[in-house]
Image 1 (cartoon, helix red, strand yellow):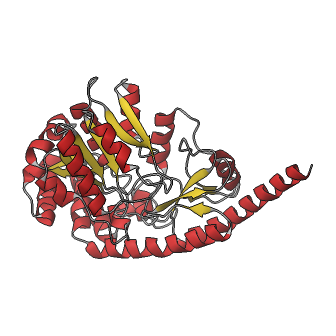
Image 2 (cartoon, one colour):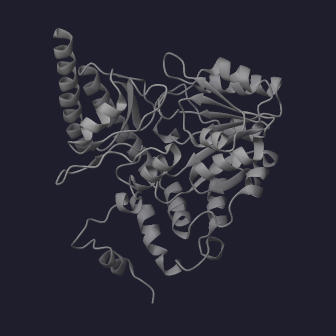
Image 3 (tube, rainbow, N blue to C red):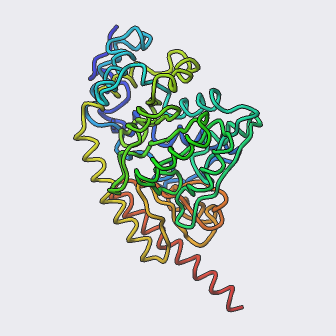
Length: 402
């Protein structure tokens, strides 16, 4: 029997037991926690003390979840939950058509993925071999790196520069030696830093000249949060240059981390291997419907960028007043020099219900990644940070006096 929207809300307890929200549908924190523990083989994040409310600012999620248009689209698809994505309406071809219309391109320039993570993994399968290395940053989003390590593929990791930005010159030099794939995360996770359009274009030109067979994958997962005027998307570059791919995801500003949907754009010949290797039926009926609705809801993205920017400014100022040193952030998170091990800081914050990011070598002894929540969450979180950092400083001073 078909389930109405009101009926579904009743099923999940929205009317009485639990508030129904975008955060509910986006499974906030759960997917990231599982992937984190799986990828690093470390214990899960600290367990909250009984009775302490949780503030999840550890996984770079949109704390508000999807916009209203996306939520309405999701609820409207429950009668078709028994259909495959190609057999529902709208279906995956409709999402491709929406992306095609947005960027004024052709269907053969687009491939869909289960988040951008599937796209990155597929690129590793397509372009990295025992003779053609992955070139990437350190630290950066670990998806490609973990794949290379797991399958013992050649890997060159280039440490970020003193400003915690991707160190472009040595990355170009390494890629120019015949790399299979250059992974360029812009803005970079976890450091939140970004390179401007001219730097990216110069990098692409030089790598293409020295090693035409190297594929350059530019991950723009945090594109919608950037406020640096020097930055521009590399999608036009990917559409005009062989062996350049741009990956996007609906997990961040669109608030759909739990829906697992993303896409890649590039020239047809460059994109074709990704389309050939992608998992069949890799996007869900609900994800497709929500993604289409979201792409037509630019106001939601504009409002989310403005909200994030305001809270980011507040959080940066608060941390600086505590003596911490955040890197220049162009995302919905901060990479902060707290002057002490991230694990100690993470465990201390968890006692008050504030969950911050995991370790990111080689900066795990000094830096912590802190995602941007709502203003209310960050006001509470910064109070906890202030107390934890003050306690740590006092303890260090006491030890020094002895």
